[in-house]
Image 1 (tube, rainbow, N blue to C red):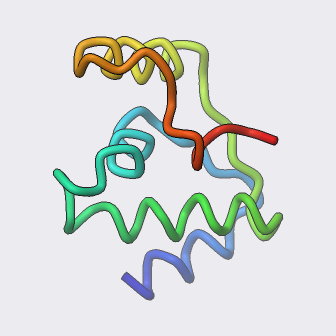
Image 2 (image 1 turned 90 degrees about the vertical axis):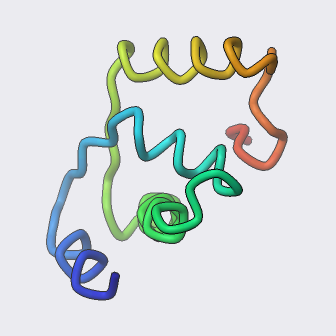
Image 3 (image 1 turned 90 degrees about the horizontal axis):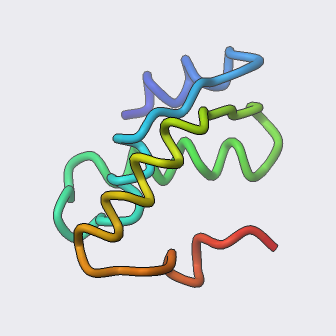
Length: 80
């Protein structure tokens, strides 16, 4: 995992796709992928890396949440 994080640190801009959000939001169901997604979002939150996503990705994530019976994001993932 350290190699991937080091590669991400070398990037100015990282495109974040649906799977990264799903791994983060559903970490109990993706225990192998969740730590890497967590590292990615920590790099973005700290400002070390700029992250972007698309409206399609947001739509896919929200549709997935609705399909799982959720209507909102967990409070820990909301923007402040």
